[in-house]
Image (tube, rainbow, N blue to C red; front, side, top):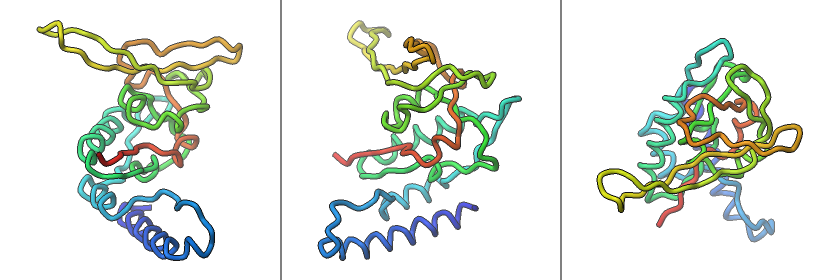
Amino acid sequence: MDRVARLERIRETVGLLLLGSLCMPILGQNSLPTTPTQPCLSALEERKLPIKLKTRGRVQTARWEQVDEVLAGLDRDTKTLECEFRFNDLFEVDRQDIYFPLTNNVVRTVPESSLVGLSVFNPSEELLGEYVSRVRYTRTGGLEKTDTYTLFYFQYQDSEGAIHTSGSQLLLDSYLVRWMDIAEHSAFQSVAP
């Protein structure tokens, strides 16, 4: 589905949800399904999303550079909006059988509930285990001793029940999940201040 058709589908969904919100008290619904609102749709259009993911390698893996660029841009540009996007709102693929990299930005930005329970693979398609949790830690460094920054890595559990960590190195495309497992999950949520 091309980008214009996807944006049109999202617009139609928003229109139906707005109509549905008028009927909410009658139907007794507690909340609406999450879909992008008009300011969020504008953010997608401005960033020309969804982008078509390019792949590389024998094991077809989405390019980590594209993934990080999209997530970092959304994190920076939507701080004043309340938006939620699924992976397939942000990225288009030609094939459903590709792998998606678990970069440091993915681990930091994607809601943890979207990752928990996913099968984690190495670049050779070997199943390593199941994603368990994100780990946040702080480092101090730089020219002044007061400079601190927060980093993230993740933990996964192998088939024997042992917990392993991705470590503190740059993840890039060292760990992968299947696109078909993550496509419908929430990729990004921002909460207006």
